Image (tube, rainbow, N blue to C red; front, side):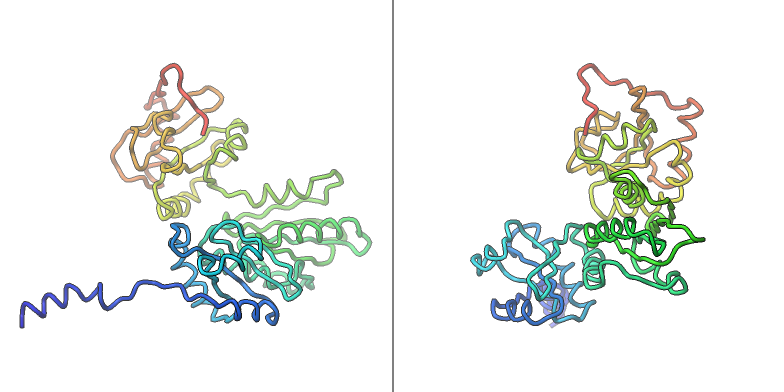
Length: 343
């Protein structure tokens, strides 16, 4: 009995905890929801694909936290014709539908918090018009909020702001109120970076779009081939951190926020996915095949200063490393000819 009891105890985690399983809507319930609900959030999936498997737990969290019957998934492997009818070409595809057939595509990370934030934005007015006394209570409702102070006669600026809000409503919250000290102005509250930006309305074309891009830029961006030039061309040095998992990335970003603000005038704190860009390790003077690493790059001179220590990368270590480079205690790594310094 003792042996059987031990065996049962060892096997318990595997037989008592069922694997996560999608609970998909039928075609009938999907069509009914789309026709009757004020909003319906749908994830179109091929359950056996890696991306859909990776999102399964997140989607369950979305459903559990929302307690909303208008949030559902649909199995395209069981009914491909329906998914083609809805112009679904890649999986998973997350969309929020309105009764008139219009919809908004979700383009963010497949994480429960971000999906829920998207769903909340999409269910609210494109622009929330609020009295000045109410505005302060709204400024913590989203990660990034744009607040426009608009005078009663500033029709052109009002129309620009509304058009901009319609374009970016899936990503940010837009609020409109009366003029500030008799003048129109635009504020950005980036609650991720804990920063606030202000500008007056732009007369030139694209001015407001540029302001939105600047205000919503992450304090510690993840570098890709698409955005590399945005950072290497600013004249600032780049402190590269390599991560192998999203958990490592998010932890580093949270821990380094105060330091990134402190050195923002001179330095970009950036992150590189070692799985996507393993060749960058060697280029930046780090050991090839590593799963993490830290290296300072000066795009103006081409010099790189890799961290060669063995200690855990913490804010204290990073600041000490930067001071050692400034004081000349760490020499620049010399690349061999033919080196490649693009992502």
